[in-house]
Image 1 (cartoon, rainbow, N blue to C red):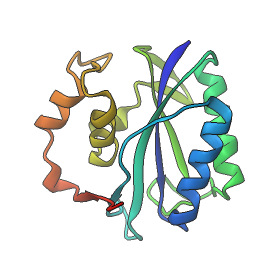
Image 2 (image 1 turned 60 degrees about the horizontal axis):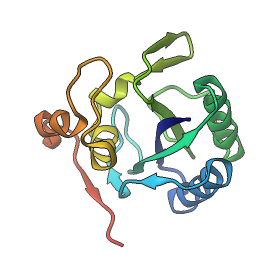
Image 3 (image 1 turned 30 degrees about the horizontal axis):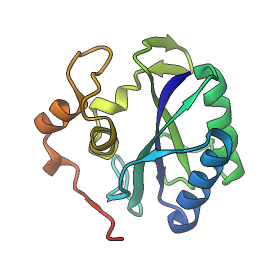
Length: 160
């Protein structure tokens, strides 16, 4: 079994798509460890704010198998893959980590580079895996978040 970390994001019908995706992930993989849900302004384009969080679960699937499941769940939520990277989306499920595996394939890079680039990925990841070390940098995610400038990418936790 490996521990897998997945970022979840949506800015189209986010109040429905995020809980629905979490239900599907739990049905597929069992218990999910989950960060708080954060609201963040769109990065790289003008669009509605996103809901973002990170979940973790254990699986015996390969990273490629997990990626296929994530893509299927996105598709079932109406994900439009014809639009560019910086665009609104019904659901975005990104495989961030599989334990400490380092992988560089055409459609799958682990650890996912966005971990170090975006507050909406790093902060929720640091929340649930703060002591875990980035497989390439060797720094813990808590330490990496502490060194990140959060004012560049404003976000805030949702009130429960």
